[in-house]
Image 1 (cartoon, one colour):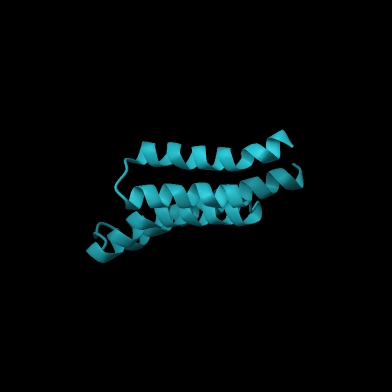
Image 2 (tube, rainbow, N blue to C red):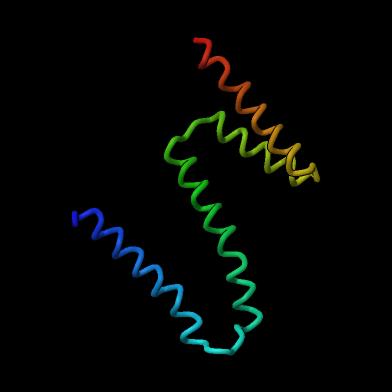
Length: 101
């Protein structure tokens, strides 16, 4: 077995152990309401962190303007799909001179 496959197997085993640790530690007890709320928000926080890291890594003003447009449109009460289309349109229009030149 190669080193890569050993690494993949180790990551899989550690992942399973981490997932089993919660039920094993809690048993039949239920999590407190506050902890459940925090866990529910973890996925959104992780996704936002990944987006920020990706944006900062490949920083461009058109991308930042598009994200800001989506945020502003949602803040003003626009539906999610409309806000995303507006953000894509702004980013595309700002990138247009780059693609033509």
